[in-house]
Length: 277
Image (cartoon, rainbow, N blue to C red; front, side, top):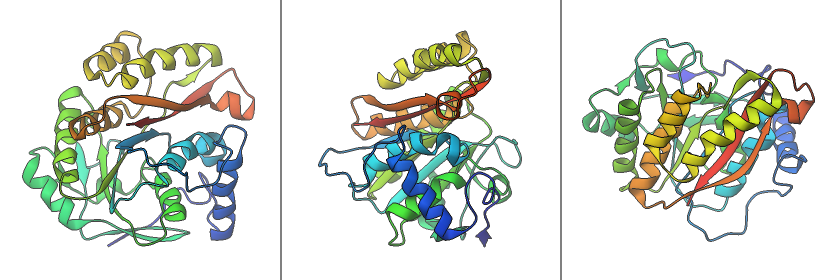
């Protein structure tokens, strides 16, 4: 089964040459890392958090995460994101499938997908859950650009994102990562449609417990301050999995809003890239 792109031509170009050039521009953008991958580094990175908006808005921030993992060696990219439309299963992966983008095909690791079902009671294999959402799709061209040699993916999309769901997903992923060289990519945007300064303040308060890998504090801040981060469960699951695997802390690589990047600061969306080391 081929999962065809649903936001090519809107969130990113549907032409392969234009898409490659746009990704390249993200790395050299003033809000990007200003360097081309691969990064010369021997530091172990367990996972990253990165955004999933249109590349013109969030691509430069997302490129920080991909730059950080560009020198890492792994066989499997686990990609976790929110199910914005809440269609299909509450938590879903898929099997016997490939994801297509203008840059090519990425194969789902069916072996890992099947293993997930034996570890976690509430994760299902459901293609429909993945059929219309963009949060995972926009990560794949970055992976294909940096790792063109048939890297396998394990997509997990979460309509249910409470702390129990995040723990189940995070613990299951860390089990899989103990037997395969794995990179964990949690996808979320931060504050949605608030004034720019307010978005910065809200998001910095939420990023603080992420860097401490404090999952309880993260949910307390999220709920207490009513922060509209869409992929909060994906962030928490990534934190949990990385901590299980030996990560000691998160480091903020970059933060900016859509207003910072394109100029309209009255109603913005926040984007952050974070690595777990």
